[in-house]
Structure formats: structure tokens, C-alpha cells
Image 1 (tube, rainbow, N blue to C red):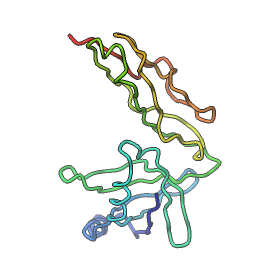
Image 2: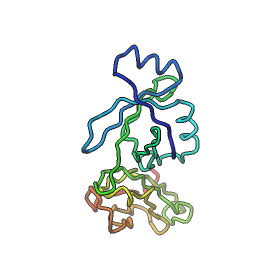
Image 3: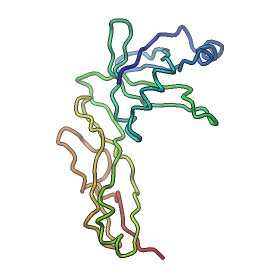
Length: 186
């Protein structure tokens, strides 16, 4: 995903309002060994990228930010929306360095509900954990984790230890936490 990046002079309220009136999105770009910089991105370009993006995959999508002839790889670390229009008001990017590990919240997708015996007996599935925080190098960031519940009976659960995590990725949660459970209806 490519975005054009522009530097803004300061963080004054009047300048930020002017950027938003022009249809652009103010933000901040920061890195581990770099001082934070005030930036902005064209709003129409950001909207087009977000329309292409599959729901839930924003935390694991690596963006290529183009600043003149320089390219920067970055993750979205924080995003603020307008309370009524849901337009993006502010966006924070974390610069990625190939040799520095990063912490990322990777979405967990639960599959196999249609074949689940517990659901066929009248139960329903409930996903307790929707993201797994992991630490890895930028090249090893997984897009998402899949967890199949096709073999669960009533009152059974799948845990974080049931998710196949690549060896280069280190989960930051305890393996015994329940991710999905099949519960009987009352």
C-alpha cells in the first residue's frame, strides 16, 4: 500500500484545521531511533487505500510512504476518527527498520463454524480474543492467524496454543487463554 507523505511545519491548531479543510489528514511519523515528525497525507489517497484494505487487517498492513525520492516502510499505530462522520482526523505511523523487532496486534480469524458439531447441536460460537500481540521483525509480520473450530463439541474451547505461530514470531500472551468457545444456548 503506497501513500504520498508531506511534511507540515508545526502542530498549531490553525494549521491542522487548514490541512483538514483542504481534504488532507494530519499525522505523526516516528521511529525507534528517530524523533517524531509532523506530516500530512492526501485524504483522497488515504480513502482509496482504506477502501482496498480488507476489514480488520489495518494493524498488520505495511505501508510504503513516498516522500519525494525517499521511501519509508511504516505501520499505522494509531488512528483517530471524527465522532459523527467517521472521517479520519489524525493518523500515527511507526517507521520500520529491517533489523528492529516491532510489536503488532495480529487479527485472529475463526473458521469452520458451519461444520462444528457443537453448533449443529444447538450451541453457538463465541470469539473471546480477536487479536494476538506478537513481536517480530518487519519482514515476518503475519497478515492474520486462522483458527479452526470445526471439531469442537458443546462447552469446548480453542486456546492460543492451538494457533500455528511461525518460529520467527514470538507471541506476547499466555498460551492457555481461550480464543473461541462453543456454548450451549439457554
